[in-house]
Image (cartoon, rainbow, N blue to C red; front, side):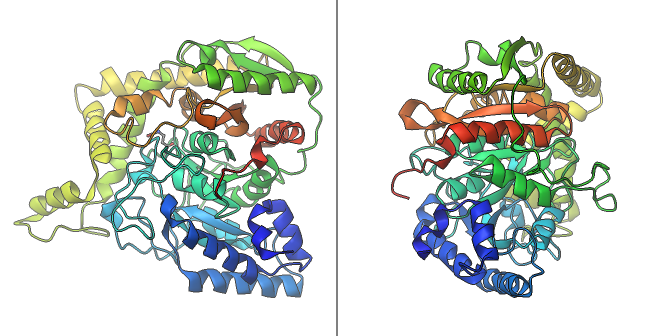
Length: 497
Ligand code: GLN
């Protein structure tokens, strides 16, 4: 095998070749480290530590030689810079954490490492995972003197999506065969869709939140981003499982081998099509790609069932009350005392808090802290926060109604393809509105994924969203895998890569 081809391999194939000693983990790691350096212009990576990467690769080679290696031994992975890591800096895209080094690894990171993955580095994300475009970045990417937005490998004048934009760009550009991401309101699914890769957000509580820097704790979930559903299944199997001592919301659901059901046939599968996902706001090019994927499913034996998720539109105000409310509380820990940035000149403690937070947080983070504090304050709590919580429950109930009539739900991930860098940078509401199709599943805590379904305007990738009932990740991955047996959108590559 020519080493120049290593980056074309799937996780499954790479793991096989490593097991068969056709290639070593060190060789593989070196190959990807070289590619990351060559493609620094994308702004995907924010930290590397070649020594640590190669040490992990050598350990994988030793385990492979001894025959006691994990399922993913030697497979390189990039981690979203929202997971804390011992061997790499962790910034969550914020000046507040510039120079921060965690004394421990997040559970997701350590579980993947236990399966043998080799960490290539940390990838860019929106500050504290707040954003839909990866433009809210306050730390410079490697090779960049100043903070820069991540570029979409399919068209570098466009955004990769957010907040896991660095993860999606890195995988799409073949700088890593896979990456971790987190999804609070769509941050795995939307960048996966915009960059033409596959990503899954599991059921809330499936993956431990320990060591994942908190944005909105009742919504935050980790998941894998890779080329195929099969690769996502391999990674998700390693990532999930109870972590009761460290994350009290981790579900008591045993880790599963999500590859086991990939080949189930789809005969008679009922795919619910929510009419609210196909209204006026959906761009015709996105609709065409989604419709074509749905036709493909009919050929595979599935039945399309019209359903309704009547509160889809309400998911935007509900999410943008609840998420900022939780964020305002979570981010109160960044006070300049325990870790991270501290203002240099101050008069007293209160002044130190104020200056530290004014300097450390970016505009979008401040905006959300203010909204969150407002909706939680006395006199407004009932009018906003409590109402939002009630509607959140109704949105979850709507899904349970829908799942009486169907096995999975399908629709677009986002109303349009990836937009131009800067196009919506000064318009937070335009960013919020673009989250309309991913927010409902997040609010309900349901698993959701994005599967490459074709190309739209500007030859940009379009993702199909699949939403399953609780703990139905295996079903979702199966449904996605079957589409990937008859389509090759997930294998297409941006030019110049
Ligand atoms: N775009 C949404 C937000 O800004 C979702 C982000 C996420 O899932 N982390 O909150």
